[in-house]
Length: 212
View 1 (cartoon, rainbow, N blue to C red):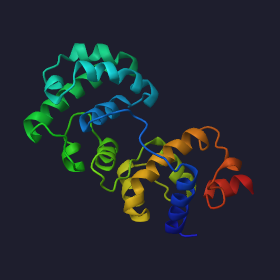
View 2 (view 1 turned 90 degrees about the vertical axis):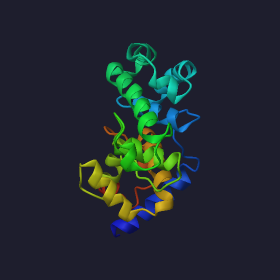
View 3 (view 1 turned 135 degrees about the vertical axis):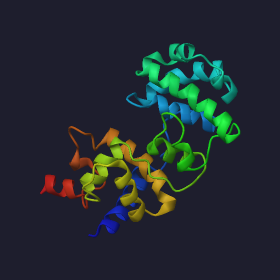
C-alpha cells in the first residue's frame, strides 16, 4: 500500500471505531478553548476540565483576563503544572487579542502563533474546532501512531503536519487527529500497543510486523 492508501484506510477505520470523536476539553467560547489548550500542556484534559469552570467563572471575558493579575490566575490553575508560565501566557495572550485583534481570537495559524504560549498544535486545534478549517493537530498521539502506521519517519512537528496534510482529505483531517487521541489512549499506547486489538493492524506497518 502507498502512504496515501494507508492514510485513507486509517481514516475509514478510525471513523468506524470512534464515530463521535471530538475535543475532550470543555469550553463554550473560542477564548476558553484557547486557554484550556494552553493549560493542557503536560497535563491531562481531565484535570484541565476540573480547573476551568472556576477559572472561567472568575474571568468570563477577554477583558477580564487581560486585566487579571498573574498571581490570581496562577492560584486557579496550580494543579495543571507549570502554573506560573501558563498564567503569564494566558494574561498576555488576552492582552494581545485585545490590542492586536480587536478582542477576537484569530482564525488563522499565522496570527494565532503570534500569541504567547501558542504553537502550531494549539493553533491547528482552534482553526479546526472553532473555525471549521482543515487542521492537523500534531500531538504525541498523532506523532506516535502515524509513525507506527508508516506514514512518515519524522520527528519535527511542522514537517509531520506538512506530510499529513498531503496524505489526508482536508475535510477529514481534524476529526482524524481527535480519533488518534482516543485510539492512543485506548489501544496504541506509547509503552504497550495492543496490536491484536487494533482496527488498523491489517495495514499498519508496526502492527503487521508485531502480529506476523
